[in-house]
Image (cartoon, rainbow, N blue to C red):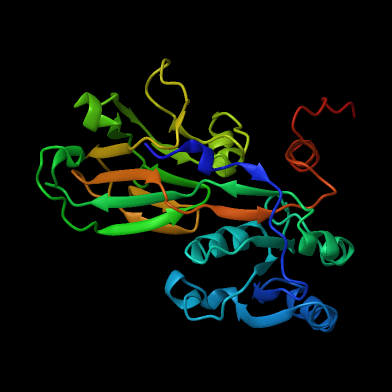
Length: 316
């Protein structure tokens, strides 16, 4: 099992060069982003080398490999933009700093003004960072060896992706319940954990625990915890509760009964239509995503301020 001490830990980042090489990933379809960039670029060029400026509509894991090396990536957009760019840059080993032009700003913690205020702290390594667990998600065709456990080679996956937040199997139209077999570390036990019917299941990282997982009744998990959560969606059981497990475990989902619209959804942004008999394997990706945090907040103040965690009832 991978050493959990190498993953998902909050830490102080290393010191950047005095004039760091900066990659700008900008969602130009967002209101105010192009205008903000025009005002921000001259300021930034005095303090950094802008090695490339890319519209996030063009990025992919293959495309970003062609870009010049960078010490830091600035992501301009909302949390959705941040998620897509985290997946695109997973192979670059470059820290991400999110500048929020969206609604929530839970991952994209900075504004243009706060970047300017804290720039020196970012460069000298005084801003806290966190290393976030990322999921590696593969779909194997029907007829593949069960859980890859009988000594036969597994065929190539029919779909593969990475996820920063979650991998969700959703029942889809015509919205009948689906039947899924859940196996956790089955190569050790040679058996599944359970077989259930419901509207689907969410496999979430700590980063994604405040997204669909939380809405479905799953636990909020601190980003520093090396874990995954498994949260059923409307299971036909009073006893199937969400669970938290080691991020080093393999999680297998076998689709026994599906609808025509049953779909695997990655971070709410990528999707793949599933068929009966297919197996979904979710594991921890070898790399993590490094986030640079706004020193004006910590995770818990962000949770209370932006997600209204533990807020008292309003008295209107």
